[in-house]
Length: 286
Length: 284
Image (tube, rainbow over all chains, first blue to last red; front, side, top):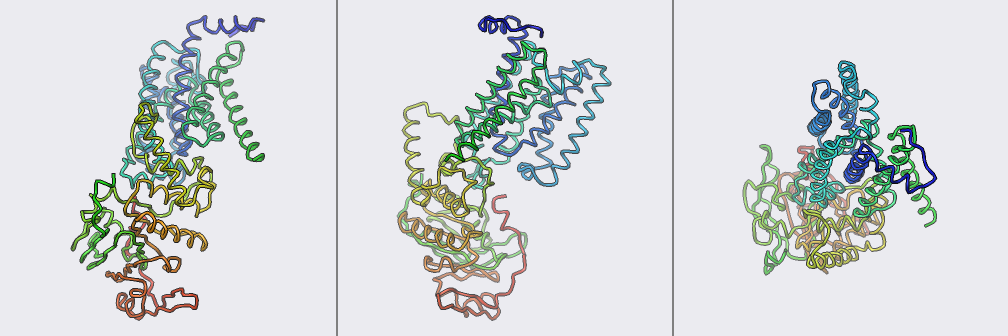
């Protein structure tokens, strides 16, 4: 990107939509922002951030392995994340859910192995892909039409699932004992959510890279939860933050020589800081 | 939904010669208990005596080996919609960013699938009625002052009131609570006991609760059922918590002493071996 800002802000805005790669990036970014923010809101409330992190780390060897085998990298992302989700569910069960117990050590060890395997696949493949940097830190700018379409389908399916299960999932998240007593399929909800989370992580990884997933998955949701305790408002705020982060990040990066991932993550970080500050300020005043 | 279950009968729970065997071990046998509408009943006894198992029988989660059990005149599984159940004390992490009022509302609609946006007029009317009901039970348990704060920031007693509201919101005819006074301080134990007594009277609900210590409940109970040594004795506190009845149950000399302020102290109670771990598996 070597475009520079002109004195006319409207012309700059129009310039953003001139190139197809930019339109694709904006569309993919928008889809991923909505998906990650909504799923992330539940993930933060369920204290499954560590699970999300694990999934994103496993996305890396998945994508690298798929590329090495000559398969589409997108397939690698989805299969690796879904597989990791099912394995985690088997290994950890409910204990893992709260993020403590011996499983965390096991899973962290597996994470290291996953990263190492991804690294190996990459060197074996001699940079068939854009390389390590793309897989770890993402590329907003190499998104194809097909990729956008796949993202749209996956996101729609995941969001419909989450929306249909909103209340049972919320009850199961806050109060698993009451959910069990009410006869809800608790185990199915647990597994189902991990799979939806896997889909969200796989989708987001393709844009932000495995390591910057949290800019969209955690930061907007965590910021929203600082500002409101109402479930509906929290979800909407989380999505609004994620959209703002992606659009601003892409917009700024277009006129800058620095990578998109850096801008997206920095803005996400700023949003989170501001939300925390706002909460502290309001509780002090109250 | 509770109207479906007809409420001509004043008898809420009836156990006759009930016996349970779990994993080859007889937990208890020949248990007799009749609980009437509006009664507050405590299940007492040492650890491992089968207090939680008895509750699970009434909830229809454990089958009887002998005898019979009916709730509202029918098998427990069919009475489930009329039973409100509060599992053993849950506590909420101090960082849980959910309001008490949302927790209570989930007692009403938490098991409902579908997108929670009221589109039709009927859905909007129902939502308004539900909001009224939420505020009503919150007021009933005396939680109006703190129901809109984060549940994790509330005290144990305040959380317990909200959980009771959550269990009450669907108008159950029978409320079953597993150790609701556990890990509360003394003033809160007294306050929650008083609240349960009030619910029995004003809402015509029967309350069955498992308790470790009978003293916070002394003035409120209609009946107790004491489980020990594989058997049970039910009746009023004065009938059951006596030296002769408990000595008979335990098969060992037990002395029940009364302090000047009316509290009961059971002396000589053999420490029950930890025979089964069902206490914590209740919802597992």
